Image (cartoon, rainbow, N blue to C red; front, side):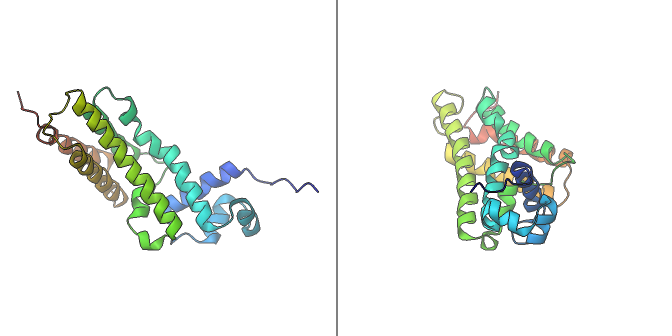
Amino acid sequence: MVGRPRSFDRDEALSRALQVFWTKGYADTSMADLTRAMGINSPSLYAAFGSKENLFREAVRLYAETAGAALWASMREAPTAREAIEGLLLATAEANGQCDQPRGCLLVLSGAHPDALPDGACEEVAKIRTDSMAVMRDRLCAAQAAGEIAPSADPAAMAAFYTTVQQGMTFRAREGATPDELAATARAAMLAWDGLAGLRRS
């Protein structure tokens, strides 16, 4: 027997659920919040996604593939490692001025309260964040091999520093910092580049 087709767009429903989790966080998002935003009832949600945790994990992956990927695009596209990192920080500042999305980064904000997440979801968020920092470290290692940064520089420490700055900008955004204020933080962080990269000022 052929099952009845869903009466809703699953991708659209997932996108709406993402907005709720991004705004309220996992623990503070109720099933009523989700069904109301998604325009479906609880049985339909469970049939399509299995559970609140599974829905959140799908939302996290969607975020990483869309809004998160846009923030990190410079890490792939910028001609130099310095421009790649500056691009990430400035993109983070700019994203928080967009009125059609919540402030801050879903992954960073979710990871700030790991006890509020189920174990599987917590591990998934942590892995994406760890993988992102590894992308930055690898870009810096490539820059070191190309002579862009000095042999004495520590790519892992540089990646940790700039990831910490980017994550801090996310929390400031959620607290109400403006894009201009966040951009000023980004520019201030880039003043540390020459010292971290082991470069002499001309």
